[in-house]
Length: 176
Image (cartoon, rainbow, N blue to C red; front, top):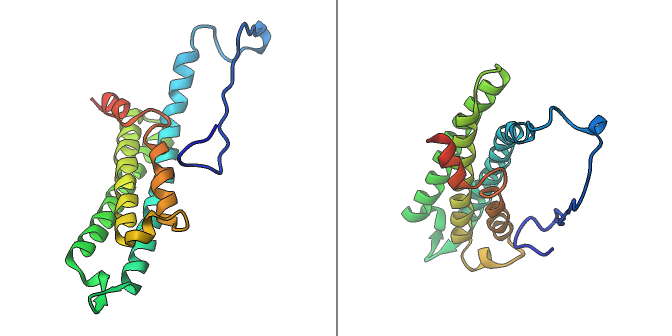
């Protein structure tokens, strides 16, 4: 299947029509599968948040480096107030994201309830990483729109993070 992002990760459909699993091969107690899957989602949300955090950090790094070297109107675009604003917004979101993700991970490691914090981490970090990728594309200008520019790939790839392990809307529901 072709997709807009995460092109290095193969995606396929898998069907289990009329599939019977012998009782000896079942995982857990019959009727508890949904709860088992959901508990995996909570951990997965921390993992996706961490991955998105790394992508956002890379967006900040490449956008900052490019802004310092790119000149327009006789000076580095890193000196333009709007570019500075985009870069500082990215940096602030990174710091806040780390705090939220670390709290969720700490609660998990301590064996305490963490579903709400994991949902907050995934929600905030994936959405802020989406903004970071968008800002990186904007800072790169026309080059940011080209497939050869890493910002373009990050922009396409991060979209999947807002869907996997539950959409942003599901994260809001979990938090509420």
